[in-house]
Image 1: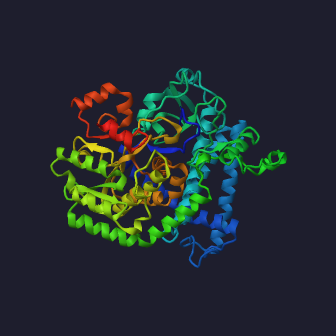
Image 2: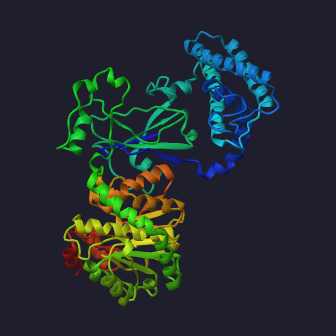
Length: 588
């Protein structure tokens, strides 16, 4: 477990990281052998667990007409005997653990008992067989229990061996200065250089410094760093009033929970901040010691972004209307891409969204395509109205419009975040959803992007083919956009199950977009969720190769080098502006 202090106000969900990717294939055969040995225990364990605790018989599950687990070649009398024997062994292991802790069990007696337990396990393996084919999940759970049983035996043996021998001089030196970790299950707590560990574990996540003077991260392990095949990472807040509790479990929870440790004060404050006019403080007894015995005070991670009724109704209406026509729209988009051969060169389609108010920016982009020979052949612009569609076609770009895309505004947004701006976010979501669902790679970009080189060639030839999603670095380092700080005005998605599901979830998040008034904010919240839960891989693009408005405003020397051709940038995105008028002024 790696713990890093961050600048975030809220703890971020845990990330599980494979540290043994290169050796996974070599260890697979060993794993198969171990699983094969454990499979012998599964029939017995399933019968005991489901039969004893849930009142099921040995042949049928109360919740299904199919057997859950059935032992092979074992009579009912023998099965009952085995169950009693297993119960005895489990109780004996627990007893031995307690005795080892109190140092009251002699080494010889425990060694004999350990050999006896191993012999019994070997005996059970020869008389039990798991019928895993029909119910994989119950068998998997029982296998974990069997694995835990053997692990406890090994732990006991190691504890007895350690208690019976004196530490060597090297061991004494190695343990000097170690923090006592009690019986937590962890053996070592060590500091490691924060920036180096971040680069190693969180490659692709923009690095952010910790609290003032914080240059190290903490790593917990159960023996040695070499044993860490998986590393669970949490980026915790760096405020002085925040502490961190770590539990280990056979059934881990891969979401960091924020808990009020101030008797309900923090929870009340956050609920008031979420709804200052409607908030009614809970009575004092709500946080009494007796009440809190059965209720954890969990603090929300995103209290300020929970959609209200108006946003829920508008999102439901728009989503329902679109969902009704979505299959037809996907088919028509697929036909258009095929007829115009928009995916011919790289298998990817450049997607944009526009209305009458941003046609001049689209025209500016079309002019920038003259730097590349075939780039315009891959562009598909989704229009908010029929006139805009025709105007885009006159520019030599493919365009798509359908009334089922929604009742969209025709004018340009006045300022960032106004109602026109937010409603056009719907077209940005549906356009990418349709092309991704049609199983084409997508490069989405805003109208205020110009091309200096062909970025499609970069994603086809230079970018890591194992990464699902690439986003432009926004340049901002604020809580609103943590931890990726992704700019959603330029991103690339490889069409696969992970990205298709991600866009499906974003489509259903229009209520959040309306609430936070930002396509970017809502997408980033969902992005982290899919990275942590579904293994979506994300990379943030280099800011010099893919620069944006933050470079323009705050790094003048870098911007001049791009203009002079000294930095081989692919595109430039004129974001970090109040509105369309500023974009045109700065571009000129």
